[in-house]
Length: 257
Image 1: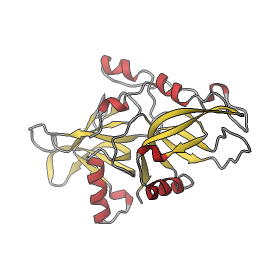
Image 2: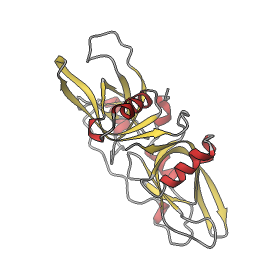
Image 3: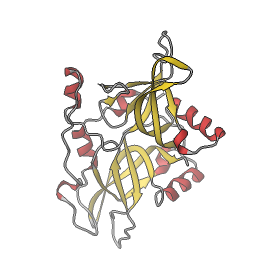
C-alpha cells in the first residue's frame, strides 16, 4: 500500500528536483522551471493551512493511501482514503482541505470501460497501484439515501506497470521530439503532477523500476502518445553540452482507455 509520506513533497523540494542545471541544444529559461508558482487561496484549518499556503492544483491526480476500516454506517465509512500526489493537502468531497480524504466509491463510468477492465482498474487503484485524475464530489447514491457519498469521479486512470510501491516525485513525461548531436539532450519534457512545474530531461530510465523488457518497451512507446506518468528520482547527467536531469523510475503508469 502507498505510504502517505511519499507524496508529501514541498514545492521547494519540487523546485529542486525539476530545476535543470542547463539545457543542451537550446537556451533554458531562468532556473530551468517553466512558470512561477501560484498562491493557492485555501479555506482550511490553521494547521492544514500552513501546509497548503504554497500549494496549487493545476490538475488533480490521486492515489489511494489505505482502505477505510472505520466501523460506522456506509457511506460515511468504507471504501478508501485518497491523496493528491506531490502535495501536502487534498480537497475533500465536502470542500475542506485535509492531508488525505475519504472516498467511498470510485466512479469510472465516464471512461467507457467494459466491466472486466473496470473491475481490474478498481482493484489496482484500491491497492495503490494506479493513479486517477479527477475530483472528489458528494453524490447521492440510489441505494444509500441517508446522506451523500464521497465519490472520486475519474476522467483518467493510469495503471502501474510493475506493481511496485512508488517512490520519489510523480511526473508526466512526454517525448520532446528533439534530437541532438551531443549530450545531454532535452529529448523529453517533464511536468510535475498537481503543480505548474516543468523541466527538460536527458532521458528516462524505466528499467530502474525492475520492469521487464516488454514493460519497458510499452512504456517507451507511450512516451510519444499518450504520454507516461512516472514516479521516480533524478540523476544528473553531465557531458559536453552541460548538465541535465535523467529520471530514474521506481514505477511508471500507462493510461487505460
